[in-house]
Length: 145
Image (cartoon, rainbow, N blue to C red):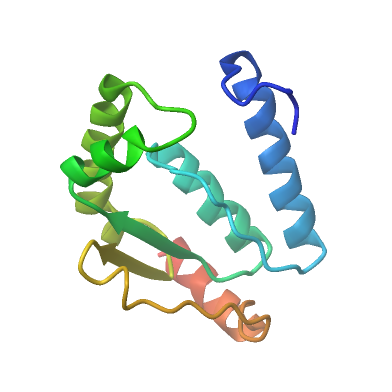
């Protein structure tokens, strides 16, 4: 979107700035927003949950827990192959995320593994994506305890 070269890492900061801007605007306009990124850094996930909470939206994390060997295999068939060291670093971060995600502020967490990925069907619906005033009040009271 920002660069004509998808491998141009110089625009990464600008890309994430735009990504966050779009998410904030969509939530402000009461639109369902999907943050389709690895989000392996806890700080990124904290930003997402806090931003959603500010706009009274539910948060859902969908994590694909795929074996490292499968990631390597799939990566080899991609148009733009990611260096194996980068995959190893991301996989390590994924393992940490799997250990910590239940303690984070997501309302719902789904972990999809290699076996279950072909069985999963996702339906995205607009209804029920925002918290009611009562739920928001309960959340705020809980946070202040």
